[in-house]
Image 1 (cartoon, protein in one colour):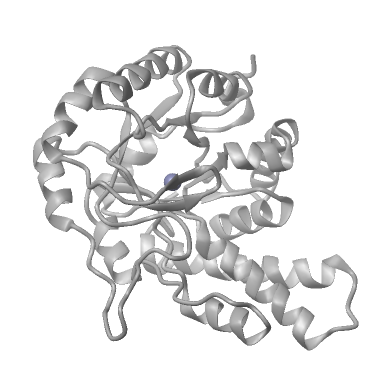
Image 2: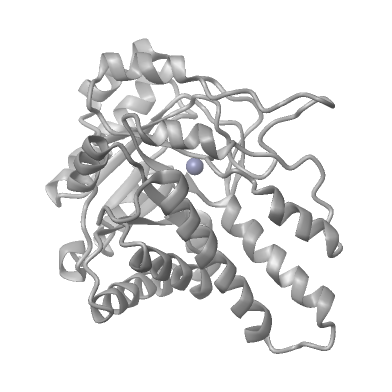
Length: 323
Ligand SMILES: [Zn+2]
């Protein structure tokens, strides 16, 4: 058993308290490889932003859980060496079983999500409570989920969304002892968030549901998943250089800015990073077809990721300067 405290990581408690008071949101950024992790920590050091490093079960399968753990440790050493003391949480994204949460906690995660949203309210509450009881013994934070987000993200996939029912949140939070709650107010996973008819614009997030949740559990940390904006400049580059992403559309950044100022204190952004990387790799392949050194296309992809994460911290989440 390795405690996250030995690794210099933080749980989310103080981070969320400060975020709610300061009216900003902390980025939840996922990583699966070295370039993504380097970009996240570089951007967050340079903008002096707290950060939640997220690992999904898909990432554990892709990159190997042992390697991911050591990458996160390495990231902490790099941050220290840079003279930075930004708070960093290492978080399991969309844990679906008690055993997976335990395995992460034992290997140094400071925060886990137990996503029981596919189950009934009673089963979700029971599973979440079981994880909370274990995690809290080690001071590890737990994120639960009520309501279902549409879209596809690694192994999480739902055709239709079900908005969170505000009348259920008090009971869920009280019953489970969970530290934060992901809710469904119109965001969704992936790069195809909304099916729009010609001339139709993206429907606004359901701020009425968010406000009702805030009224019922004032000051309680709320999390938004699936909050990429599917930045059109990246979709354009991808399509210009041979890609075929039709009707890719995300949540406008001004909606997220508004959410970040509320009790929403963590916003997950993954697809925008995937798009930024793919756009730059395609651009290099399209403009320099003789190039075959992976550093020559992964390097520019990493530079673009740094730029994109800094933009999110500074202009969307408001987390820059809040470490
Ligand atoms: Zn998610």
